[in-house]
Image (cartoon, rainbow, N blue to C red; front, side, top):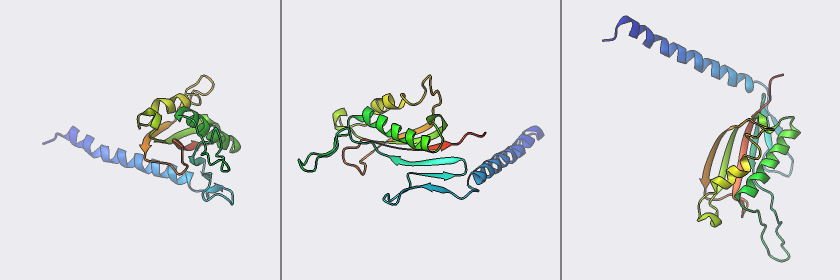
Amino acid sequence: MPNRLETDKMNKTPKRTLVIVIAAVAALGSAFAQSPTHIQTEKSAIASAVWAGNMLFVSGTSPSPVTPADRAKGTPAVYGDTKAQAVSVLGKIETTLKEQGLTMGDVVMMHVYLVADPANAGKMDFSGMNAGFTQFFGTAAQPNKPARTTVQIVGLVGGGALVEIDAVAVKPAK
């Protein structure tokens, strides 16, 4: 049977947890208190990004081809290896952030989706993706690194694309 001190500690833990949960919910509530602002064009099926309070949610971004498809010759687009594609995608995300008054240093979370690379024995090229990623994060010019999840998936909408990344950035308080 627990002594009085142990009982007091056990009773305070749920209260402390409840206070933390309430604070987290309040913080999220204030982030979403404002109406969201959708960054979108009429021709796109989805928003390229959405503001919710001081948070910018950037949609999944795919690479641009190194060599565009030539329909007349029947050749497909060439996107390059995983590193080249990661650099392309992160460059596009950087442009979206810049247009919204943010930088890569404001990114707090990223989800990276990698397709198995036939040139890498059918496995995702995690080191190639990281080689591109480290050009944008953890550098002398931009030392911040976001939280990140990286997963291998079966495929992406664009044929030949090996990388898609979405991001969440937070506008710094003034």
